[in-house]
Image 1: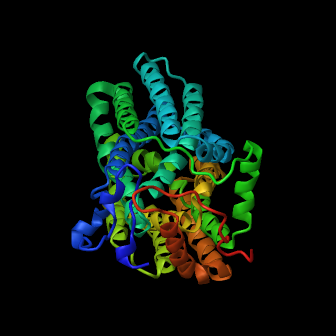
Image 2: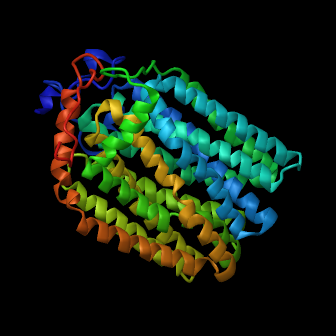
Image 3: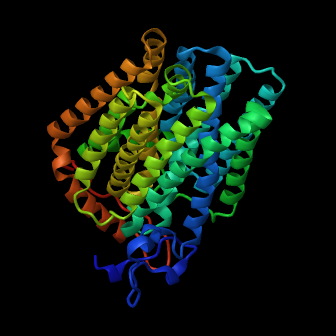
Length: 463
């Protein structure tokens, strides 16, 4: 389609927000970096809500990890804690995807976010009263994982609903940029607060961020499902997996996201061990490492936000995956803390490019009525992290974190290169993404949101 044929991002903004309408100059330079936020009140509100959510989440992760390392001094406990979050993600994500496609997504986010407020507040109270036990964290983390299973697919599905297709990668990049801003500032806030108000008090501050996210999400307009016809819950459940199975493109993209999650991402579980035992920099150093990773991720998000028109997305995808794993191996063998900070920033840069391009590609090749179910399967990749996190934690307790992280990083690079070179779906991916843009544009009507879609050919299938 011509730029002049672009249409509106959401029902609530109406015809006044025609993207690229005649007589309107497309934003350039740094204005383009934030183009998906321009004249789109609903996406701005979602964006602000994401800031509150990610600040709360990343502060909670830092505080929880430091609490375990400081109180119990057991790297294996960190792996078990990760498993307690990830297993509910793995088990509940398929159900959450079906629910996301069947209910008002705004209401779903409000319920899931309110659950996080309650769980986080209880944990903070237990820490303040010195009544916290390890099993309390396991239970709370399991409940948090269940809430994340419903929260994250809804948030990602809303991005594609609220912005036009030509700004989708920009919007996805800005959404992930909020996570990295929180990874820069959040750990610093958490580390600074631990001294004067303790871990429990800092937990209460994270609860405040969650509350702010609930408040902003509340002002979003209703987001009822757009469905051509009604199916039973079971039919929707089975249909989502059937759709993915028949699409070689989706299978390839999901596998490409899953392999680094299993092999490399367990490094996040071991960062407190690097801070405490490898470089002896304490909770402040741990927060600085998290912030350095966030700086790199933010830089990656801002770069990728300006590449939504770049036609060779497959190059970005492979480059991000290989760069991520290589930088992670160099981080693990760094002889000094400050050199490690440089490489952990490169880790954040590479992982952000990988995640943003992969998620954008998936959003472009799926129809609206399947969006929640497909994105929930993507959330299941986080549930697979214990396949690497638990053995990584146990091995780090016996052999130290350095060799464990190096082996995982190199295994990740090897796996994604083999996958990329052997699956034919990657050779046609760029063409499939351009076709996906055209389908998304055709699925929107001037002056409103997406019209109910009809079944479309499955990318990468013979159907």
